[in-house]
Length: 479
Image 1 (cartoon, helix red, strand yellow):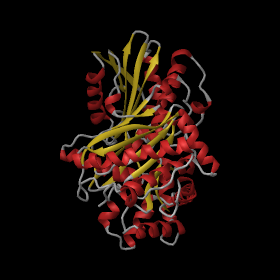
Image 2: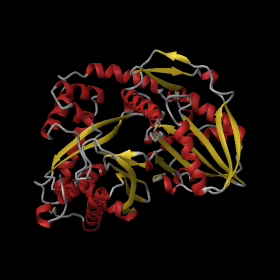
Image 3: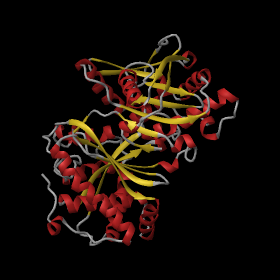
Image 4: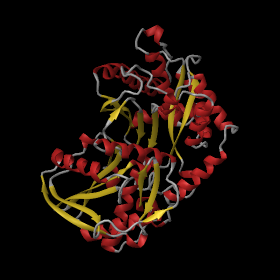
């Protein structure tokens, strides 16, 4: 499984097959429970985009190649079993006068049927069709907020799944195709389900209710909230921004350009990991330290200040669930006081461990506390520059051909950030960046990304690296 740009998905030619609710949209019932905080804010944005006639890009998708003849009827039953297992996928959200309400399709009403649409030459032609389908159907304001389809050919088929972000996250996307294919093989051949697919999975509506209950417990007096506020206050009351100047005004966005490159190969990962283990820190702390070095040397940032994506699946029985199980926490630690990368690792480790502790605070509690403290609402509402780290070796499907050949991608709309999505598998450590497609942004990011590659390579090759602040090397630019 690899996170990559949409343009890198090029399924071979074949016959297009899709799955849709049998008999049209089934009857739904009002659900008294609230959507999660992230869902509520997301769907308000989706609804505003619909009213303005903007194309929907807030979806995630994954695809892979499967050997064997496609049994379309078995896949129809598999999609139904998958949907019944995950309560959040049977829900959709409405927005009226700013209020978000949830509706739910009863499990007994879930059924899917096949539609065969004819031949496609594959590649860019089919990709364009699939992206149009994602924008039209993988949207949380109707049921289902996801799409499933295939390109069938003799002896194999492409299987793809796209889902509105309100109902999915990166981990969900890594889980979905192995689970769906296991249901499919059980339906097609009678094979028994494995432990990951047969184990009950917690529902996202239940998670949302627990999240709101938890948020009610996190007032400004909680130490996690106080530390959050202290970190933000030390950084001019702002959430983390890209360390280099992207040439955009506050709040401005530009069409997104994906940037991808390898940081380390398998041997390099082993060497870099050995450095981290020698200093008794996690691999992710080494990733944070490398990013902090690039921030120092290119942007002149004496202290690291970033926002890391954390999973909230450990708040209940959600490890195998489909949904948006994410929180965010600030990572801050001193950088320039360290002389070498190895010295910096202890600071990065401490910053990461504190971020994990602060991630116990629901994001809505943090935002409320920031606003109550007098923080500028415009700065609080600004989308922060993010860092995400996922180890794709840690998922149930790892090692299977479909998982190893899987591709995960996101909708490509507009951005004002250059967040870093750093991922690992058994082949390589690589970076993906959704960056503004402007000359100024690309010119600023090129030396920053080059330095990041250099840091990883030198630490892996030499076992350590002296820090070289920007004043010494005379490079970079920061607003």
